[in-house]
Amino acid sequence: MGDGQGQGQAEPVEGQRPVPAMDLAGLLQQVQAWGRELGFSQIGVADVDLASAEPGLLAWLEAGHHGRMGYMAAHGLKRARPAELVPGTLRVITARMDYLPRGAAEGWQADEAARLAQPAQAVVSVYARGRDYHKVLRQRLQTLADRLQQAVGPVGHRVFTDSAPVLEAELATRSGIGWRGKHTLVLHRDAGSMFFLGEICIDLALPLTPPVSGHCGDCTACITACPTQAIVAPYRLDARRCISYLTIELDGPIPAEFRAAIGNRIYGCDDCQLACPWNKFARRSALPDFDERHGLGSAGLLQLWGWDEAAFLHHTAGSAIRRIGIGRWRRNLAVALGNAWRATGDPAVADALQQALPAADGLLAEHIHWALAQRGV
Image (cartoon, rainbow, N blue to C red; front, side):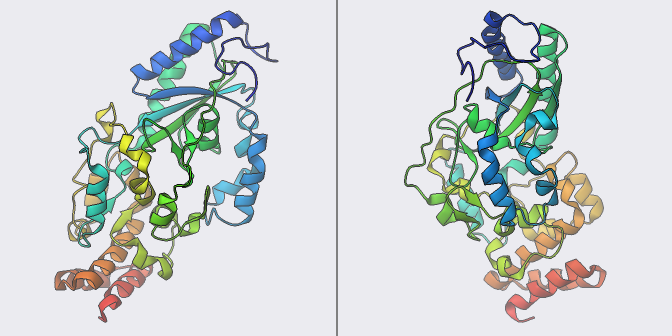
């Protein structure tokens, strides 16, 4: 991992500002305290040398596992080289923020699994039911960076949260936020995987925080649980098969081969996390931002199908869902309604789909026709 793993005895680093080495450990403790005040559950520090992660990144891209997410390949190995992305970077402050809603029941995993078994109900990933995490984390990370600058003077920095070409999970695991699970998400013994990650690239050589060992053992629950077999091998995800990719990132038709497996999931998928034993330790958020909004954890498919664009924009204001737009939203709903039509035979579902056909564009119409065909209409 490099010098001073959590010991506070940093060796001189070329380009480092003149902060006494004996003060760096104390400064890190102060940054971690500020982080807790801002609602972060954990703060770590990673080195910028991610060279050992480059072969895996290249192999993943060469296999096409990023699908149509061209931005994943556009920056090449810069994604594994923070100092090229932000010149002068010596360390990356990593942050964990738990997002399980404050009101989540003790048996929340079982509750979510039960909802998946109700075809007429709409399932939105837990993380997306509240406020857009990009906004929440970015604002608080910037405040943390500002406090650091107030303490030591100008610090070159840049704040990220799922918003730039950085290997977030790699940085998180190297800095002790957790270990990489077989589903590729970061896991923490006391918090499961229900958390967001954020980073601050800085030109200050804070002491590194040490990594932790993995604790997945022989468990393959996440691999078995994936509805579309997107986890093609332990620690290897083919995004092209992942329901989160299909319902959020993919901007065209959803491949017919995956539509039935999508079930009633209309935005994202939590199945690998629901199956993970470590998520019995998932922590409730300290913030109200991730509490459910607009009934997104309890709405029916027909209720959401009834939203026009104005209603969609109103109900998704401040939400990560808004970025997919009304087109993908209704495409996803059409698939879920087709699955509900096949499972229940409820004529109200077929009527709602047929009524939407005259005004549907080509993309939506294709998915509506597929949906109606699930029971021979």
